[in-house]
Length: 422
Image (cartoon, rainbow, N blue to C red):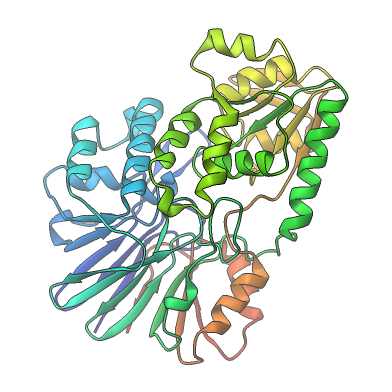
């Protein structure tokens, strides 16, 4: 018998953590965090590190990796992930310690311990594990992200992590066709089961139109963006459409992530376009360079993607008052975030300071997740006997997805702590 325990991500988006127990191996798939309204981390359920045969990290976003170094206080289970994800995770761990260190169960030593145990894997590579096996496939979500195909006690299980079936300028879509159709269990995220994403071509066209119209009117463009994945996708989209008449600046941790990703062209769809984008973009190295960037027209891409802090707030204060400028939000905005307030009220409150924005405000659905239509097609790829376990989704969205697939073996996790047996 194989038991799958949902330690995090059950009936919620974030703090992803799945424990798979077989007779010979116990494998932990991701170990992330959520954050409460005060920015304090919320952790997955506890697992004893000494019980783990292996840990797999799908990608380097904090909701999938943010609790992971806490496993490496006194134990050293091997950590399987791509070399790119390992380097990006190190950036995210250290940034988390800087911002929330008081609340985290790890410090620099545990980060180093975790990274020492990293066993680099590449796409389409298999690892033997005491008679079982793990295979890693492109997830199409962010550079270096993987889906994990497990063979454990004779059962075949796919863990998607976050995945995107659609190709982008940055990445090829998820590698579904190296996955057998008749596997026993798919553990899948359904973050965006609530709706279908717009056609990619139309999305890019509208985004570029907003940028170019702002520049033609004499304004600058501020793009608050997620550090890993979204920043790089936006850069490539700008360069692909020849938006090179003004400087393109990259600030904050995103500039470091850009450099790390540059080292791993094998994980990119078009390494030449990426290299060109790096050539055309300029890094902001500190406050002196930030002031210079504001003197003339520019496109500025910077964390934080929901305006919860970071350099984006600095620029918003200085660019938001001018009607000629534009603020483009290319990411999901949580209902409790300053970015959501900007979209709905035109006012942002950060650190008890109110910022009233006169600049044009746009939102574009540059999601790196599969939408409802893609999720339905994904499930239909598998045989009717395959069990589908939906995690990393609100109960409402997950149930909506299941309604499109009557007759399928779909199991919706409504809360963290649930278990599933094969």
